[in-house]
Length: 275
Length: 230
Image (cartoon, rainbow over all chains, first blue to last red; front, side, top):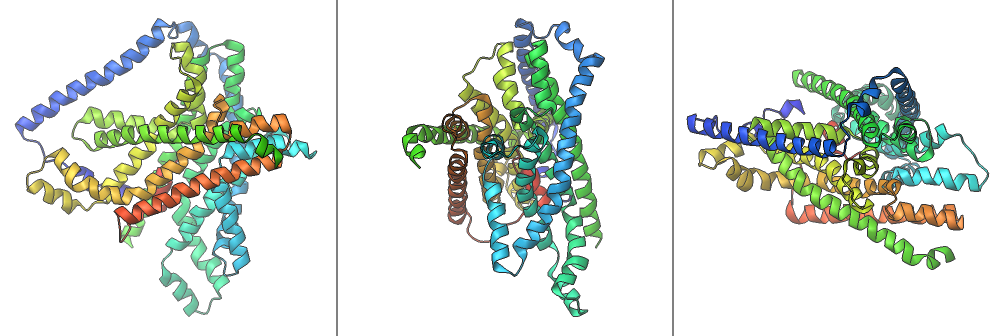
């Protein structure tokens, strides 16, 4: 990403002369006014409906409110972490199976991946929620959320691993074969270590996606952040405020994770550029 | 099988609603996302900043949180929309951020020399974009934009959580009534797979027609950044 940031977006316009600078200044002032107008209209709408009252916002600084939402956040992080720890290794296995020379194995892996990539996670959640109890299988609410997360994430992450494996230079295969490694040996000790390093930033982004998926705990009534927000609403009746705070927390966490991914990616591009 | 035949109208309605949500959400997102991308590459700092903030917010908010905020939160602040339009609004806001990202990285794949050449023959900012950069960028954008479309389709299922009667919601309702879970969920799954396969093959055909020849592939990280995540 950062490696080609020196490209087209920077040369779309000339370094402005005096006239151009005046025009840019004018447009800047106008657009600041426009943006401020939009934000102002939004705030006005909130104020008119009495949603800006301090009494409706200050409670979120109270310790019990924070603890209540913190419990939800803990549930979110736990579900995300458990799902990632199981789904990522499973995804690697799926990717290897899809690339395997054994046809039936490769077909089965492909079918699994394309199926779970093509259907929405909510459908899987409902299937676990409604279909399984009909057969007398009951799992607790945590797994009701985490199992669908694992199924869906294993499919999308498998594609990430596959792309990583295919991105390793062909010469590496050839070199490994030349020093007498069997295909399996060269995969394990030559290709995979490089591929995993290549996809590391994408794995962090897969984590972002898992974190977003964990909001479906709302549907299965597992105590993660979104559901905890719902519980809070049913007690306090502060609808906009609670959902805004909850969304804000998600945004901040995901923003941080995305930054980490970008830093990892930039570092890798730099290393690749140095050869 | 009888259940499917008996409730065919309801299922068909669900499919129609899913398609309507997807087309409307994606259509508006295409307009908003392209406008945002133009803002992000424009020489006007406040517009760049605002578009960047927009993308960072709506790329990182979980779609379900956004839908719940719009459908259940905003009525308190006086914004009363039917749930269907809440769904369209949520999908639009979220998909626009991903479209903006993909359009921007599409612009980045056009070699610098082309923009420089266009400027040297006297084209201005919009001229360079319209006649030289965007037409080329569009070719590399088709496949990521089709992915955003499929993301919007799959994301539209979350509208079930705000009781919009699309496929997932209809399936769940029918299941409560008939308790034929496995069959119903298989049918719903097949419908989604068929829709996303249709979209994917439509995208391939579009790409073949509009951009024959070599494709510049984004890196895995770039693809993940642009990929829609529910």
